Image 1 (spheres, chains in turn purple, red):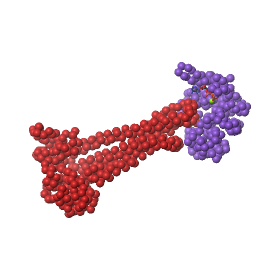
Image 2 (image 1 turned 60 degrees about the horizontal axis):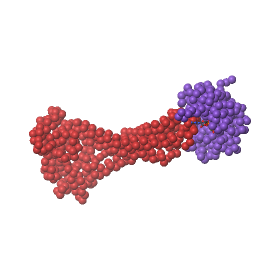
Image 3 (image 1 turned 60 degrees about the vertical axis):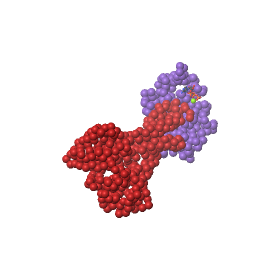
Length: 224
Length: 405
Ligand SMILES: Nc1ncnc2c1ncn2[C@@H]1O[C@H](COP(=O)(O)OP(=O)(O)OP(=O)(O)O)[C@@H](O)[C@H]1O
Ligand SMILES: [Mg+2]
């Protein structure tokens, strides 16, 4: 069996408030294998986002280890980790998190700038990604001029910009109506089926949970 | 990639245009101050040093008062007496002593009246010193005949002060008619070129300044050490002053070789420039604090954006760079915006001085000053942006993403 893309080993996340300690993740062990479609389910406040940020290498554990492609991320420099994250992981957030003063095309090109890709290549790839998501007419629009669904599709295009191995999505449909949300989920499923992307998604959507081949239930910071 | 970061920085500045411009204004004011004052003081220094350089090396200048009161001496509140002048004349090695006498008077030519500096010249005894050591040369006409009411005018008099002035015409000074007999060649400084020269005796009778001089110039005879003679002049003057101490308060004299004078003047001008620069820097520092404030506000507002940049692969150094470029641009534009009116004002003051020759001051606008100004303001921008930029880079991606504006 090949090595998992991301591997959590007895991961704890503990927040410290003066004298009180709050453990949000309590010894989570999880492998994300190539080609998986993982859905994380659990009640509000159970630690889903915290876990996802850990998988996305946006956060470092208080205890335990996170491996990205076999490398312990706590041993990497901040810059090396940023570089690896930009290259290997694509993020889709509930709040879209697009840069408001950049247009759609510029938002999608951004991750490629940080990987040092030449301008012509950036532009070509960003345009084709936007077109493949049906946004060819919205290329020069700013996020504020677009609907929620369109913004989320731009965010997906941005997540795909550097052709990452894995897409991490935290409630990507949380701010969308069910029809639009459905479309976004179809895009993710399509990426899994046809592009063979590894996908980890936090959602309450039962349809997607059905599609998934691996559901992770989490409660009080523990996988159950 | 620098080009891309530059584009991002410019977009960020444009998103907050009003604030960016206000911050820039803060720098503009400081740089405006520094540039105008620096240019004028540098110009003043150049003019004065240039004037001194025209003087021959075997020339010694004598002024009453010690070096520390050089300002009172320059203003002319104390004078060398006729007795002092005689002592200088008697010092071995002194070839000739020329009192420097000048006074602003209202002069009428045809129907125009203007204030012009009159200069009394000892034509009878020292014409060759004026010609050889002080660079006074006749362009048209000739020298005034000693004892006659004749004047020579500086090269700018017939062009700028009394345009169209002709030789062999009459000019009225304090109710007396003088004939214009010569026009001098330019001596290289506005002040010298704007004066009106006449024989010393005539000068004394016209102005009523019959005795002494605010300063004197001595030419040293060949074969003597200029340095040595300067020392004996000083010693003789001070010994004599001691002998009659009590009668008059002043008992100190300054005697400079032209070289020493250049050094002293250069030093004083240097101090003026340092002071000017210090005050200007305070203004720029205030502008820099403005930049810092704006950048910190910007980091706070853009926390989430910084989180996004990091999530999609921006290194810490990239974040620092983007913020530094932003503050550097603010500094640079502020520098440019302050420099243009600053140097403009300096040039304006120079132009004003040309109309009123007594105020003559040159504005020095050199590539050096321009480059210095731009680098300085860019540097202030970067420096002020450094701490905000670093605090932006230090943000942890999760925490940054969690925060809402
Ligand atoms: N920076 C922080 N400081 C303190 N506590 C935090 C911090 N981040 C998260 N928490 C706490 O950790 C717990 C889990 O948060 P998390 O966002 O992971 O929950 P979640 O499962 O994603 O919930 P939801 O479904 O509402 O998004 C919450 O109780 C939250 O208050
Ligand atoms: Mg959450």
